[in-house]
Image 1: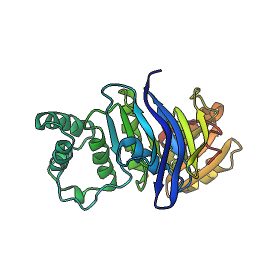
Image 2: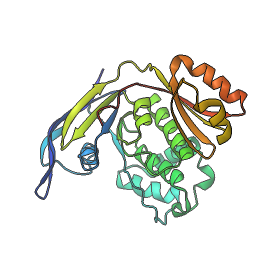
Image 3: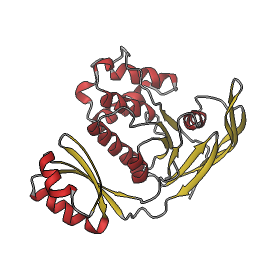
Length: 286
């Protein structure tokens, strides 16, 4: 597998605090690397260094292809921006040396892909958080990056917005974009990652390559009246865990029992939204 970028002995110090200490990492073509760890462990610092937003105190980041392009999706979007989508993208694109003709062509493509065509001339400050995150990702891929760096892409989003952003990220990966991201969303990490690294006190404390995406558990997300959920499902021995908020429910079951449970949900008036195979035990180290 082609190696796109190499991080060598990377260090970053703020004032008297060494946030990163000799971090080594390779990003290969086609990989999706999840960076986990507690708040303050150095996750976001690592991503900003890789994206070129900040400079390291020591060590280096080596591009291993002649024309490597990176995109960055920060954890926060400037919610009070007065721009509309066109103005915002033209502003950012011009800063990055993209031509007006290219920006217009690419932006029209992205507006269609992200279902935002009818909102293109509206002021961004009026948008929902989910729509703002779409724009945040759009600016990150405006230059057709080889590697997309995403800092907490699902943070602060409701269930429906998270689902949309997940699907966008999966689609980008299928199109050939490699990724490195941070997240506290356990299921999201298990679902899409090819590799997981955990950072603790500025060093990589754990690394796991996920070669087999098959899983022994299934998470089923569905809508059902709470009374039916309790009577029909919660007391079944096959159910490993249950979460519900109003009529939105999620359960975890063994893979081999998932068909039976799905039939029971549908037969009792439930509406299934998502079925996710989970890599059992992948996330135990966080």
